[in-house]
Length: 199
Image (tube, rainbow, N blue to C red; front, side):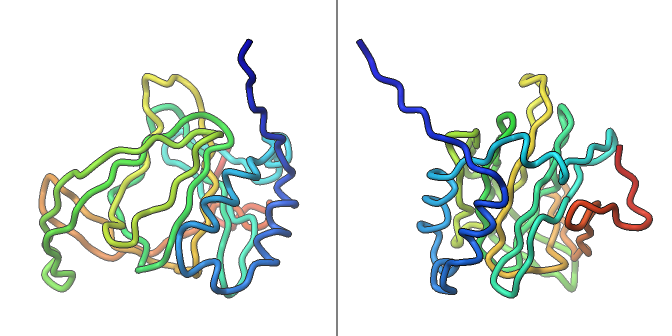
């Protein structure tokens, strides 16, 4: 007879309350928040107010934001993927309360933002699922997130960033180019942002 460990899921409000109660030091390393996301998988139904979908592009939906961190739900239709990007030297943790996502990591050999050139190579791949959150490696933070077409299902990822940021560097490994892009939310605290369509 084998035993199966079933982790009780929590409401998104419970996770937010826990994050808000953490000291600033918890966001400096990667271990504490990653453990928290593993211990507190979020109940799918509690995310409903924050989930929006767009067939052309994944959506970024802000759930909570303080000076220490921001928490967002990103909604992925089948086959959608992010660009290869960094996080402005901030820590990042990801959990997938719905579906399974692939995080493709890259090693950045060189970048010149002013010239718009870079050189990077694929390093490894990590899968995130309801039971397996991950932390972005601060030493090699460049990555992209993919909802694999073969999974044949929508997915939702929760992202915690250690300090809020409103732009990042996007890379094209194939063309060896890079540049800054501004980041936008589709919804903020469950309300649509003007000019950002979601369905």
